[in-house]
Image (tube, rainbow, N blue to C red; front, side, top):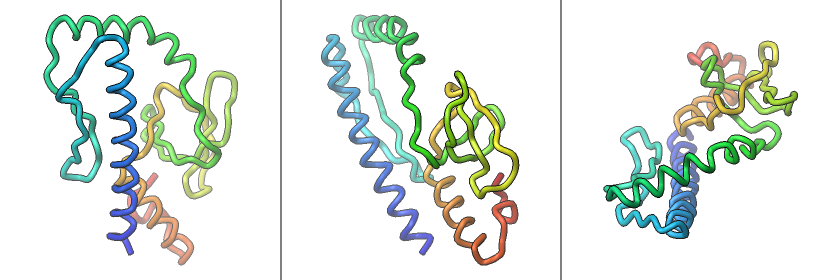
Length: 155
């Protein structure tokens, strides 16, 4: 079951990475930055990474300018996750489920319904890796049988 679940999560992540790669390539092309080496690679752990490849100085400057000019907008419009979406608070290292927005912060609660909910800076929250998702899913399944996530080394 674990291998099937891992394969499913990896396939989902690879498809998301391919979509992100296509969107990034299109956006960069629209500002005159061509990245012929842009592609998706899977790491040994199964996580996907976008590889930008080599970039000449001119397009590199245009890309840097575009990122700097758009950074305030990107911070302002960071997408709010779906309810119950699994997230990692990088400031604390805790894994939690999205519960809502409190002012400029996001409200997270323990992935297994354990512990007190907390607030997190949206800029310090990321999606879990494939391995974190599989471990969380397996801990939830095992938890239903009486073993806690903490027994598996999960927060």
